Length: 444
Image (cartoon, rainbow, N blue to C red):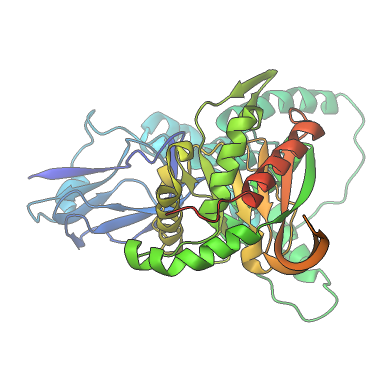
């Protein structure tokens, strides 16, 4: 029998694991090479894993909702059409690593120990994500979901890691001993479980009228966690500058049709904004940094992330790598390519990893300005507002005149731990200068 292992592939920088969200094929189903087998989700992006060969799914090794490590075998594909039973009954060999998340289910000694534990807990009442390994430890140690929800996680998006729960258990033991030696108040016995209390409280909550309860999807929960983490990590300060971009607008209006005919794609404002930001970063390299404890790490490469709205309404930040090495045409192609991949849900983890500075185009929604939240671990982010026509005073050789000009606001949020007002303010002013001084005779 010829078997092929379906391995969780490497999914980019700093991505070590993924959650199996949905198996697109069941055991016994036929599969073709390059056909999608399973949907996976990381802290960065959702994606699909294709089959490496034609065959039949003979064994699924990692269930939906469980976490698998990069390089781990998640399924077996039989390439000679043999039925699944033959593979299912075959003993596991040392060549097939046992998934960390499911090791307690496959190791006989542990199975005997856990048989004496309380019934399996229901984690559905919690709004937080817990890996199967953390759930197993909580189950074994008798930690209820309500207590687990109180643990401060140190993982990505404040996820509770193995070390977090083990540290909590060691502290919990000493606290329990202290409580045992002190008088305890008499409490009325409750006939409801923590899970049922949570459900009842939600059901009985008065929202003041007719409402619809919508549960956050996985990505929205991750975004919420990242935003809270950024606000608690970085003291945010925002500086604003209004820029006269009349020359830039006139140049684009003059060249956009010819550019689209020649290059086969649209010339938007975003690559022009990114070009100005890259120039300003070269002038002020201490914006292109991250904080590592008491150290400041200045990055000598410039990777610009661009906040992009997905069709679902969620937000993602694809990254233009080495933006300082690209001309305007190269930036335009990168912007359009990444935006298209985002709209069609084809971004890979590499596409959204490694950013050093981020731009958010709030003007695309008709907003004139915004106060963006820093995309950790970066230390600054810029929001560009809508370009609007305004009357403005111009100085000429014949005196001051009032003219209609194209203007926009730039909003620069920065981490006040390491970026002071002078640097943050000068940086956004320099970006505005580059936009205002755009060469209207420039060729593209």
